Image (cartoon, rainbow, N blue to C red; front, side, top):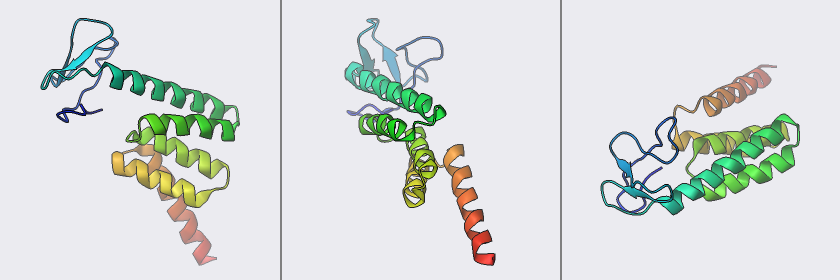
Length: 140
């Protein structure tokens, strides 16, 4: 995620909730407040929104494994609404659309995932499969 004030990128450190790595942001010492090291903006609300989006996404993944695709789609859409630029959320949206037979929407979601992360493995692989299927259908 990026600081909405100055655009600095931050990532939580592995194993320490709320602390920040790579020198772009720093934990302020309080468990409820994150501040951007560059501009000192309070990022705690943004982090809470991100955490909520990740929770919705995890719920969607769980529902997907249960075959409850419409419910999974609703949860994943909530995640996207809170954190639109997360490629993994769009990749899952594509998978859920494909599983429900909505291939144009699936392709659109995978393409959106690649806009945010050109290396997203799920989106890359799924689009390659769709392309191969399309080529095989044209040759029949």
